[in-house]
Amino acid sequence: MRAEVYRAEWLHDGDALYRGAALLVRAGRVADVLQAGQPLPPDARLHDLGAGGIAPGMVDVQVNGGGGVMLSGADGVIARICDTHARLGATAILPTLITDTPDATAAVIYAAIGARRAGVAGLAGLHLEGPHLDPRRHGAHDPALIRPMTAADLKLYRKAVSDLGALMITLAPEAASPAQIAELVAAGVIVSLGHSDCTETEARAAIEAGARCVTHLFNAMSPLGHRAPGLAGAALDAPVAAGVIADGLHVRDPVLRIALRAKPSHMLFLVSDAMAVAGTDLDAFTLGGRRILRRAGRLTLADGTLAGADITLPQAVAHLVVAGCGLERALAMATAVPADVIGARAGRLMSGRPADFVHLDDALALAGVWRGGRRLTDPEPLP
Image 1 (cartoon, rainbow, N blue to C red):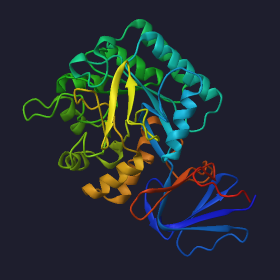
Image 2 (cartoon, rainbow, N blue to C red; image 1 turned 90 degrees about the vertical axis):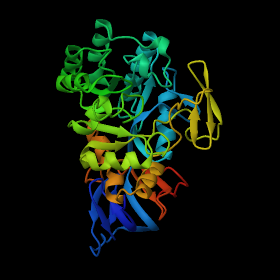
Image 3 (tube, rainbow, N blue to C red; image 1 turned 180 degrees about the vertical axis):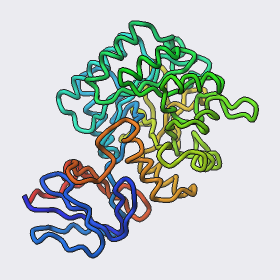
Image 4 (cartoon, rainbow, N blue to C red; image 1 turned 120 degrees about the horizontal axis):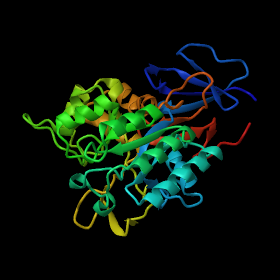
């Protein structure tokens, strides 16, 4: 198969941004990143994408739904969510289960294991956001389903992690002991703290036990106070990674800029917190029997409580840049940084890896997505 070369005004490989570089693809995999002025292989076909740039397929570790469905154990749901988000620019995701019953949680775990074995494209693992949370910070989660972690839960998670690629569990220190956190981490689970009203001291005990991430920084957690730093303060100060929803609603821009200054570049990343409406024109959906409304880029319960976000990762990158973040860092926050957090071989344009990449126009809007070297939007004819 002939070589394909893709060129735009700039290229970001996940770590750094290059002007005038081009992406060389062979047999669906990245062969090389050609720097400006470097000659093309004689058999190469050039695709000049014009304005804007090329970046790795984005990595989203908090995806509750998409394509009209929320995550469940039903047949085909995981594949549908993965395909929807690939077309929105995230070619590797962690489908995320919001707090549910023990039976529903187990069903999703087994469905994700089955989907991994079936080779569902874009499935990097699973994220369980709950049920081991603090009901005082339940947000859009059903407080009736929130519960402490049991020995049976721990056994299930430890058994499942090796078959999932990556297993992230968002929990509150109030609902899982440091010993339980340490057991999860020893088994390979990525423990993320969230939906918690814990003190800074309690947060640090969980971090010392092995928690190394924080879920949607500032949202559904004890806030930063000058005498009571809470989970938000611990997250900003401790050497843990943190996801953030950069839509201007969940975190206002001045606070977003504070987080950008406080956290090292490899410890802050973007998440979409996407819901069922992602990739559709639906104006509402149902979550645990409750109606979620979609209005002007905002998803809320009837009482106005935010219930997930209505933003894609490319849109979040664009928002970050407008808010004052450099383009190089903003793109890394949607690609290599989250990939490193979950240990995924994604988020970088490196020789030998699948040619999963996006084209962003000069306004950073999504203009095209390629997976395994094939375009998912407006497909090109095969050679």
